[in-house]
Structure formats: C-alpha cells, structure tokens
Length: 107
Image (cartoon, rainbow, N blue to C red; front, side, top):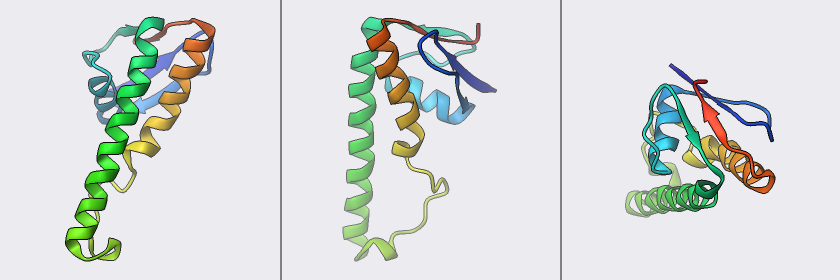
C-alpha cells in the first residue's frame, strides 16, 4: 500500500506503507486506507514528530557511545533515518497549518 497525502495548500506527498504507518502512529492517527489531519492537529503532530526524531537520534548516539564510536555501530536495516523520512511530512504539516488546510489520504 502507498500513502498519498494530499492538501490544497501543498503538492502531494507519497510514502510507502511502512513509513506512512510509522509517521501516522507517531502523530497519534490510526493508520488506514483513508484519513484526515485537521488544522488543529498539525502543530501537535509536528511536535510529536520532532520528539520522535530527537529520541531516535539520542538512541543512536547512545548506541555509538556504547559501541566505542560511530564506526563501530552495526548498520541498521533501514539506513534512511526517521529525520530523512519525516522532514517532508513536517514541512507539509507546517505549510498546511499556515494555510489552514487539512491533509487527507486515500480519498
């Protein structure tokens, strides 16, 4: 499944199912074939994503320190970080909040 996030304020944002599901879970939305993020939910969603990114980066830093340096940390299966996956969605949330337009998917 592919998540295609749409808004009248921005271009479409497409995410593969695992990434879209993860982002939706972080912001407290139920992943599914259809949904909506209303304007009132956008700034808390940005905060939740930023907190999750900070935690993921802190966990990596702790693993690097425990392993004796970044070069000794085992390479994760997914070499693309949460920050890299979430930043386009965060930007979409900010733009839509500013324009006061909802984000939908699956419609």
